[in-house]
Image (cartoon, one colour):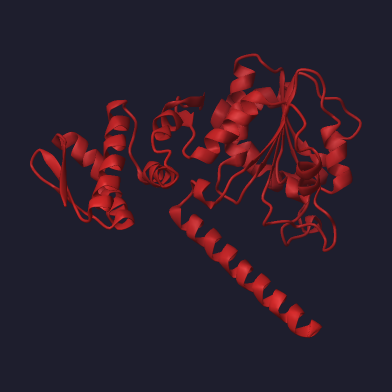
Amino acid sequence: MTEHINLNSDKMLTLFGAYDENIRLISENYGVTIIPKESFVEISGTQEAVYQAKELLDKLCELMDKGHEINKEIIIAAIDLASLNRLNEIVSISTETIAVTSKGKPVKCKTLGQKEYVNAIKNNTIVFGTGPAGTGKTYLAVAMAAAAYKKREVEKIVLTRPAIEAGEKLGFLPGDLQTKVDPYLRPLYDALQEMFGLDNYAKLLERGVIEVAPLAYMRGRTLSNAFIILDEAQNTTILQMKMFLTRLGNQSKVVVNGDTTQTDLPFGTASGLFHAAKILTGIKGIATITLSSKDIVRNPLVRNIISAYDNDTKKLDKTDERDKANRKQ
């Protein structure tokens, strides 16, 4: 079966991407052949595959008509949405601006999971966001915080995380405690500087409008009129999480992020993130959003790496179950 999509040369160049990488991604996913002609694109293959590929290309053309950039991230997101029969949502996901960086670049969601995460932050007081590395949890939360401050919805931005090492020891780093925890807070610094600009960020930090500190510094405080982000929350204990959540004051919003696959707590210590997300489910004003490997927006290889590790873990779990069953026999 063969279908055609009319395209001018400029749109065709944008759609195909550098070295045809965009169109090759679509061809490989649907098992179709896509050939550029003088004024149209020809799609050939099985009837179902051609229909699906054409529907996807039509939606990408709609995005181009709205002035949206077409890249591999957008195409991967569109393919994922198509697999869920939600392809129409790619337009709303890709066109809504969440915030604007200091250089004027709009910040937008790139996946359905990110869209649900952002909507949860808008509509709830406390949001637990879990998911693997590269899903944009920290970056989007900081973008939302910056946007809230610029709209004067909050007076302060507080970012914190537990000082738990990922295989290294704080004692090996020079300086006082603040100096030692700075490397752990670097992703938060980077995102804030991108949103406000280096000079403006430094001024806001000096004035105390932006506060970036280890979780231990939160004890005994009440945080009102603030947008508060707890990052790497999988490394909190149950008591630390309780302490943090009870810092919530009036007119504040809390986002708690973590990766359930990368806990650095000592063996046998329960994670405060898992516990809180479980016992607080169903309370009005609190939402839990789980992002998956489909929401990874870093290099596409990261998605494949995460999937490989997940598959390996599943194999190990099955092996352990068989070993236990054999021992019982």
